[in-house]
Every structure is written in structure tokens, then in C-alpha cells.
Amino acid sequence: MAQQQTSENYKGTNRLVFGIVFGVLTFWLFAQSMVNIVPAIQKDIGISSDLLNIAISLTALFSGIFIVVAGGMADKFGRMKLTYIGFILSIIGSLLIVLSHGAALLIIGRIVQGLSAACIMPATLSLMKTYFDGKDRQRALSYWSIGSWGGSGFCSFIGGAIATYMGWRWIFIISIIVALLGMLLIKGTPESKVIQTANESKGRFDIGGLLTFIIAMVCLNLVITRGSTFGWTSLTTIIMTLVFLVSAFLFFRIELRQANGFIDFSLFKNKAYSGATLSNFLLNAAAGTLVVANTYVQVGRGFTSFQSGLLTLGYVICVLAMIRVGEKLLQKIGARKPMIFGSLITAIGIAMMALTFLPDVLYIIFVFIGYALFGLGLGVYATPSTDTAVSNSPEDKVGVASGIYKMASSLGGSFGVAISATVYGVIAASGNVEIAAMVGLLTNVAFCVLSFLAVVFMTPRTQKVAQKLQANE
Image 1 (cartoon, rainbow, N blue to C red):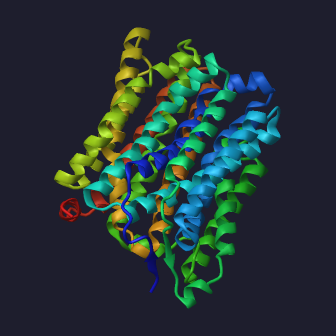
Image 2: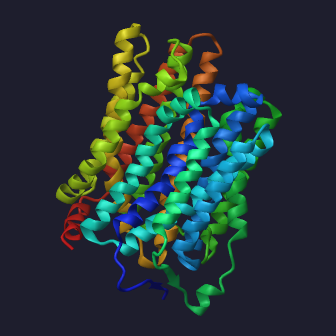
């Protein structure tokens, strides 16, 4: 049986927490800021919209694909080591983007940023479980969630503001500075990893599972994002769909037959973990709201990128304020109810933004309130969901389990954005942007409703008791 190797006397500090948050911000704030600076990049380096859309989606896609691998590597080789590697990759990726004057460096930089996030997210979650206990762990996870959910909220506003007043490249220069500060803050933290048995250490890496997973995810992403361009019934789309189906079939066949699979499906035997991971995937898919709403108010209502970013301030404020509230609710009533309420409130907020038939002033008011409810719901949901996933993971598989949970975040966001943008684009091509925005936003409402159902049917009521016991440790 594998055992944890840690420093017995070390307890997590605020310095470690803030260093980890800085690492999380390099992805959720800075890397994701590209969703609101498309015109600025196109004007500066002359890249086509097709290539730019691919570059935007690559970071979340590569993060989602490799995050489980990185989580397993963190358990095996050291969580601090993988966190440092993630910081270094973040700096390299941002530097490549700063230096880019065409598609090549931009795309490579976005891929490297995705690999950076894949290293940082599961490794830092594992460190928080290892070096914090009880209420201290829940507090640390709250700050982690502030970096993640808060960063995703700030990305539209910060990206638009920096691009407008400083130039879009400064987004990634600041990201490099934040990464360096994060590395400085976590310096001195003892290493944490799993001591494996002889049989476990001899297990071969699941190359077949990884390759089939990559092929399946890339083909699915291309079908969603480029299907309308290729033609939904074109030979290219049909071939990619068939490749996705065959690859997905082979992936599941390989994984279910291997002891050391790319994804450890035994983790999903825990109902609480499964519910948290699935609902997390679905609620992150609602990230498509930012793309559709930002695009619509700029195209349909004449807003600038900075003005559209200002509309998200209510979201930012509420998500940051409510994450700590979600932590307190977790400690008082358990995880299940905050996750349910969070999903429903998020759905209501997005539904308000979908009322595109309203006149200008009234619609803008609804959008601002809708964004605030969007942030409020996500803030209530974030810490209870993350704590449920981490707390229900075996000690020797925390890295892998955290990796799968955050893979759900990245892939949910990647495919949610792709689906929403495709729905909006296909309908907008007919000339009716109001209907396009309404349907695109209602698609995100559907994701929230499905997240709510996942929590209701998969997160046990007994979780409340478990959380109370943990809070009193």
C-alpha cells in the first residue's frame, strides 16, 4: 500500500496559500483573458479569426487533457516539484505570447500555458489537503477558489482594461511577474509525495489511454468549434466524428482493463466524489456565458470591450464575497445544500441575461444583476464542491483525484465555450443576433440545471455529517 511522504512537523502557512493562489491566477485570470481581447490581437499581429479561436481554446483543452497525468506525476515525483514546473511553464508560455508576431508562437505559447495549468492545479490542491486540516483546509480551499472562480470573473474586465489602456501584451507580462512572486512565496515548503510499493513503481505508463483520450478530445473540440465552417454533413466533419467515437470506445476499453490506467475509474465508486466532479464539469460549462454575453453587447448593443468588461464587475464582487460564505455554509450545513443553491442561483442569473428582447437601459440593468447572481451562485458552490472532491479522495490518490476534478473544470469550460459560441455563431449568421444571444445563453442555463440535478441525485445527504465532523477536527 502506498504511503504519504511529508514533513511531519510542517503546517501550511498564509504564505503558502497566497503563493498557490498566485499560481492559480496565472491561468484563470491571465491566460483566460484572451476571451475579451480578440480584436486587439487580430489588429496587432494579423492572425485570422479561425486560428485565433483555436489558440483561445487550446489552453483549456490541453490543461484538461494533461491534468490527470500531471496529478499522477505530482503524487509520484512530488507536488512541490510539479508546482514549480507549472510556474516555469507559465512564464515560458506567457513569454512566447509576448514575443509572438504571428500564429506560430501564439499557438505554442497557449499550449504551454495549458500544460502549466495542468501541473499547477492538481499539485496545489494536493498540497492543501496534505498541509492543512479541518477548518484550516476549508479556509485554504476558499482562497484557492477565490483564485480560480474569482480569476475567471476578473479575466473579462482585466483583459479589456489592460488591452485598452496598456496593450494586450501587458496581460502576459504581468502574468510572468505574478508567477515569479508565486514561486518566491512557496519557497521553503517541504516536498510531499506518495511512497510507492515495488509493484506500483514498476507499473507502465498508460500511453494507449492517453493517446486515445487526446485524439478523442481534439476531434470532439474540432467538430464543435469548426463543424459549421467545415459543414455539419461534410466528409471532414463525418470523419472526425467517427474518429472521436472510435477513440472514445478504445479509451474506455483500455482503461477498464488496466490496473494503472490513465484515469482511475475506481475513484468514481465514491458517490460524493462523482457528484462533485460531474456537477463541477457542468457548472464550468456555463463559462460560455462570458463569451456569448460579451460578444452580444459589443455586436448587438455597441459596447466596447472595456465597457462589456465593466458589466461583469457585479459577478467579480459577488463571487469573491460569496466564496468565504460558501466556506461557512459548508461548515454549518454541509456541502450538498450550498451546491444545490449555487447551481440554481447561477441558472437564474444567466436566464436574466438571456432576455435580449428588452430595451437597452433595462437590458443592461438585467445583465448587470444577472452577472451578480452568476457570481453569487458560483461563489456559494465553489468551496463546498472542491472540499467534497478532495475530502472524498484516498490519501494515496489525492493528486490523481484532484487532477480528474480539475480536468472536469477545464474540459467543462472548453466545451461549454465551444458549444455556446457555436450556437451563437450559427444563429447569428442568419442576421438575428438577439435570438442568437438568447439561445446561446439559454444553453448555459441548461448546463446549470444539469449541474443541479447531478448534485441532487449523486451527492449523498450524509455528506452533511461528514463535513461537520471534519470542521470540528
